[in-house]
Length: 154
Ligand SMILES: NC(=O)c1ccc[n+]([C@@H]2O[C@H](COP(=O)([O-])OP(=O)(O)OC[C@H]3O[C@@H](n4cnc5c(N)ncnc54)[C@H](OP(=O)(O)O)[C@@H]3O)[C@@H](O)[C@H]2O)c1
Image (cartoon, rainbow, N blue to C red; front, side, top):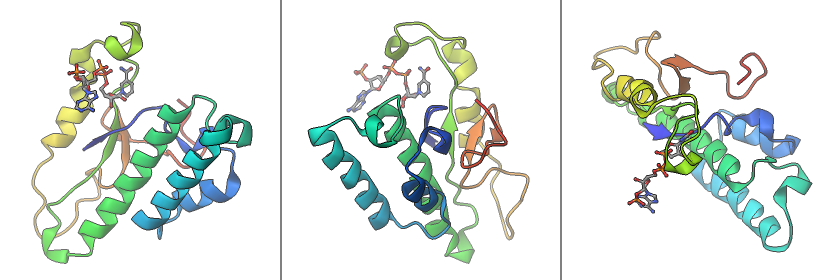
């Protein structure tokens, strides 16, 4: 599982073309790299937030890309129908009191690891895909989040 963040949702991105491509089911790793390169070029001379990228800065954009990469990774693994047991998900631990947040946060570390551990210990898939099990998803509190749409507000 890949550790993302609630800040890494597509709602924080206002560059419509990039938003559509990150959400697309045919996004490739190379295209994702190009999107990141463009972001870095903009950051060399200015503030990407002034160009419609997340106001919360590179951290939010990097997490957004982690989630997009997760979806690509699952699609790549799913090409091999004999390996339905390989599952990749992105997960947000929530707002956790750690060094990163200067010990602010509403979750303890023990609470925050619940979803990552749940995903790490998903039951083994055999034969066919179980639709009730998160697969190539962005997960919060053990449930898939609509990271690309507007249904699920953080
Ligand atoms: N805390 C939150 O509210 C929150 C919310 C959403 C997502 N997250 C995500 O959850 C993950 C853990 O965050 P955290 O809050 O636990 O942060 P943290 O307290 O700052 O811990 C980060 C950990 O990553 C290690 N680390 C940093 N850079 C590294 C590198 N280049 N190579 C190897 N290890 C490295 C650090 O090791 P050292 O101690 O040795 O430096 C530390 O153990 C991060 O991906 C973060 O983005 C956190």
